[in-house]
Length: 363
Image (cartoon, rainbow, N blue to C red; front, side, top):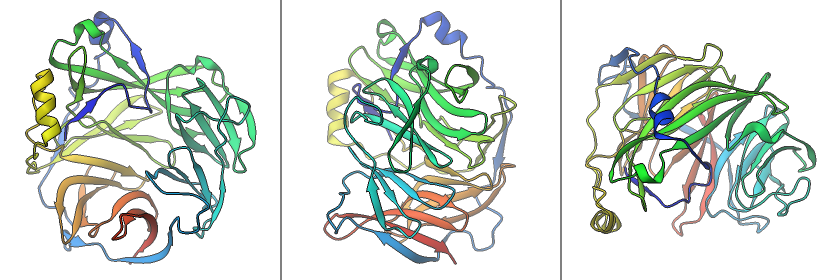
């Protein structure tokens, strides 16, 4: 699936680098041997519709908050749930009951601009306030704790570890290099100290974008998932089926794997045809094989481009050795937001297109 980009991607800010440094930085472990799995996993009941037991659901019927574009669901060690939706940072109890909106717009301590991202740090929240160009911590009541040093740069937080934060920063080619061709976008993964003063580069991924001087169109998937223990980061940065596991401590890709997969044809939309006519950017022929990634340190769930109206989206399951162990359909109308042990959290809609979130338990 191709995505056009018009300087609207809020989770990343552009860090311009020269052409020489751009291509010099691609000294990435591209020679890593890829382990290819068969098209069928080892589980005997693979391809089933997943059997789930509903535990609770969250709706906005009470009027205390609203659901318009809910995403960024995170779960604290004690089971509390946090969720971002436009100018809201919502906190729910482990039972799904609404507790508080932590968002306060402004520039003062603990206040946030409308453009922000976050990750959990134990019982605290690390806020990346893009509009005010700062990192700071708040507690679960929304009370400001302290700020981090500004030397972190234009980084987006991926998760916390005892020794710091895993962040990602993007390097884009200069506009003069965007001459209607595929160019690499570099995604730098770094470990930042807890005070924000020290930053250590761990690894650089790259994905391709088709770029002109006026429009950029994403050609490859750009997905990362940090395991709950912060030891391994799982990524997909290709249009075809390719998963990589980054060992944070070792600072290198320790495993690359794929499976035999039949790509799904992409149905070109009218806006894409218009974009191609105006900019010369060709539409994608196929959907990205991998649509999303989920990792909890024990298993890797891969949302594929395969979907069935009666069964939902097809998910593949791999262990951290890269072995294809299972596959299943999530069920119609379900979109996975988070997995935690035997529990999963799904974003769904009712007949009137109202969003709600459901916690399920695997049977």
